[in-house]
Length: 86
Image (cartoon, rainbow, N blue to C red):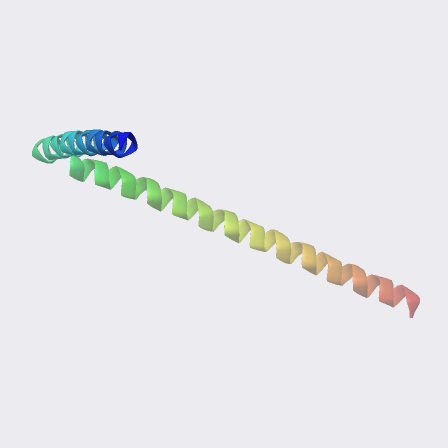
């Protein structure tokens, strides 16, 4: 019986804590909406995401070009070795 009471108390405590946390988060969000900070924050996040995406594309293109150059060099080396043995 003690176990059930302990779990009940723990559940009530966690539920109350979660409710208070959610209420505080909603108050902060509501204050941000009222002060018009949120659209600026969204624009900043979107800008950072766009820059990060562009950087990933640049890195991928550079990696692809480097791989293509390495493969081309390997093919030319293979042709040179063949030409010497023929």
